Length: 415
Image (cartoon, rainbow, N blue to C red):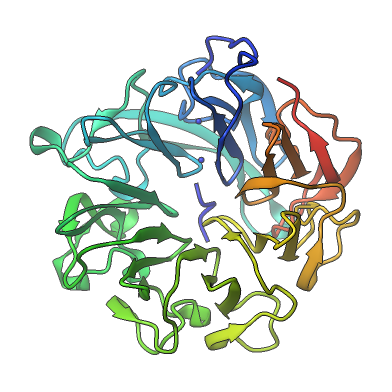
């Protein structure tokens, strides 16, 4: 699967004491926080998705990159709503206009036929016993200020979410999506799509989905998407690995057996829902066989929040005592439990208390506490730990499985 792609460096001072951090977001190898003031971000910046200053060399031997290794103010520092895709960033401004900047895999920037720049990225190609370095040109938009989705018509919305190469926005009347249409992730009939890179199906401008109104929440995964409507969960996208939690695929349809849902978390090939403090999950996350319909997760009574991300093969919750528990894959130490062994069931993360928010990437996890402190753990090959010390050695868990620096328990991000 494509690396799910989510942040400008005017090197920022630490937040003022009065500006206690209250909001935390992440995706793939990027993380952002904010309080009453501006956003601060760190992580991968190879497509200038954080800002025009590329930053320091980072990444792995098989996938070199450029990163912001410590928190700094991004180009979108003052935007009220931000969504990270990994290789791009989208914002929903106070004017309700959606704007995106970064890599344009299969129309992700939503600019229609507008001329784009070309970004060069390096990597390895070929069979495992004969890998060779290649340079690939990817369409991109490196504008200092993100450009409006939808071209001249623009896209006005009240909610915004991004997945792996695609994005969706909602208003009071429905949901519109754009970007990669592979595996049905745009929720519209295959025959209505365009052709983009390598003839992949896509939409370069927003397209309206049928049957979704009065959205309570909008969440996107690697190849799947979900919306909460009246406490019910509607999903669309790829059916591989039972990640929709229901039979079939394609256009939006409700998951049976779920009611009064307040939160949904989607990852790579799985999904979870929170209702009345109880967590139910479906799909393929360390299961012997994919779970085709929601299955209750034991030991999480009174859970306060549940979080994953499109690039994640793990999931975390804020527990009833405001600690953190995580489960899933753990090659990079992203579960924060002191080792790199996978966990099929929720396992408590040591040393965290009074947690108010969580955010997950592909190889890392972060928590925000009531005191305004940010603690992160997992891989640090792209500076995901925000300048905190990473003394461990882990692996990416990918096919190449590069060795990377990491922290297998929470470390405090310095501001």
